[in-house]
Image (tube, rainbow, N blue to C red; front, side, top):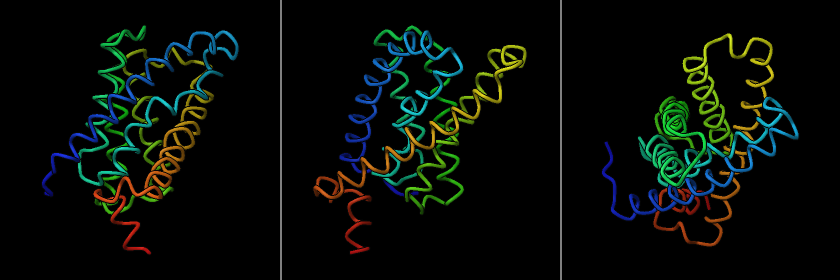
Length: 189
């Protein structure tokens, strides 16, 4: 197993905390968006709640980065006053596990756009599994397919694709030269 450098831990924590604050703001928007689009239609918003996983994993590129980042971000959301309460943290664990599983399946060797998008899908699956366990199938009688579809698409686009775009832009500035994402770019060039 690769050793973590202090700067990797610090960047992971800073990004996870920043994402947790974003998650809190995003959860505040959930209520009016649910009123406008309905509780199923508002699931287009889902992907932002999992962006910490693919973002940090793509930058650090080490086992556990996606899971730890998502748990820290969910904890920040919880402890800064999310109306979702403890479920924000519990669902964050499941989302982080879903995203981490995708990177584990590539043996932590692929962090391209498609892999990040798949990690968003994995996080969405983790979220759905948590929701089914916590709420039961009866909770989703007519909405399970629509909710699942929207969360999978949003996880891929707002979680994975957006993270890939952010990492690509950060790499271009040179600020990630000391991290795996920056080194990978230099090796390709």
